[in-house]
Length: 418
Length: 155
Ligand SMILES: Cc1cc2nc3c(=O)[nH]c(=O)nc-3n(C[C@H](O)[C@H](O)[C@H](O)COP(=O)(O)O)c2cc1C
Ligand code: FES
Image (cartoon, rainbow over all chains, first blue to last red; front, side, top):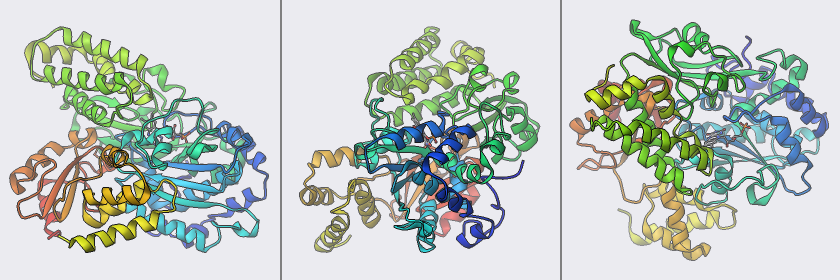
């Protein structure tokens, strides 16, 4: 497949505006500015683009709600919080192809009639902040941002906003609270941000990768775009591969590539001649898969059929030496730390699950611990306020389902079979 | 340690920079931290007075975000990731190494004030796990030897 999101990134100066323009950059913006906002949204809807931030929500629909809302000003927010452990794709776009993101944002802003955009960048990426600041300045200097873009009477401004280390701020309503200068705790939905977002105004929140698809959709049109990926989930996808593979990294492939192909063909398979033990396919909030399930196709629609989810496309590959209980323990420490504290099932549930796993790891020999993990997990899934608490148990529950003997061996024999 | 009056001047000028901006608290706290290495109590006190935001509310915000520090730290901040991808690639060994070689504990500072250590959740460098930040610089594919060599650069 031709590279779309990672086009030209081998070029050491790919982030430079001159280089970007030389490769056809900002041409799609001019095309878009000659269309009506409604026409752009129609094209994005027809392209079938789904949000790459994890939920897979159809992008065009969200835009339409914001455009139709009578309130103004409207805001376009780029979610660059990239907090799901195992994920590093947005970072690559922002480091190597930042003008693609900016071009996508300007088009999106024009389509929803927003005059202001924010990039909410995670605090852990200070070196990306430097790059983006320069990128934004370059775009202003060239007249792609500002009061009168390319002389077409369109106004759009971008402000870079930096987070300060809170995973929950990747959730769109918590992100909005954070932009407003508050603790990043999620709001109840509805109302959705597209109608009531930042400062109570219509706000579209989109992931970095989602927005970076927009120029290409404008360039080749929805019909051609639909030929990439699967009919239900079209387009290219950035898969992040880490862990025990020969070639970890970001791979741009058609949406719906099988997990097996990604791990074995692209990432080179398990390193050091070891056996594959398990894969976390979409970041640590998605259920784990045993080796017999890796023929799943990595897209939003098919992954649930295999008992997991695409999530952020963060694939963590683990070989036979890994103790899955330790992995669960580490993941739970993360969720317990990142729970925002707003609701009890998540705030207390993550802690109780963590303590239970730690007890098993200490060899406490309590058979009932497995059942209590399952029960806690189902309560958290059912009763948590937002997806953080609902998905925090996924890894543990799926590990019990697929690798129960590993839990039992820890409980009965006080040791790890691996 | 900066003189109190000099410190106040810096804080006042930062507050002025953000005074009329909506959602100003988080970037302001960030700038304060960049200036002092942490968020001093007097800064919260001054922000509260100038922006007319209750101190309790400011502390609510300042303590919500993991990257805000409330005590002075060392000259250089090491932020080492131990989340899953880094863990399975050996981050725990590095935590032990920092402890044995530099006497650094999680959240602690070396006696000579040279380094502080924060244990991080994923910092988005999983393909080069284990990874860390030193101040604003990213380093991946870490080993004990490599960490030692990198830290030499930070005096
Ligand atoms: C706990 C939590 C963390 C999230 N973190 C991110 C994130 O880091 N980046 C992101 O784009 N979306 C994240 N999301 C999803 C956002 O809420 C939102 O759906 C997304 O930004 C919408 O953009 P998209 O439609 O382009 O995917 C997170 C959601 C939850 C519940
Ligand atoms: S898990 Fe350490 S950088 Fe992602």
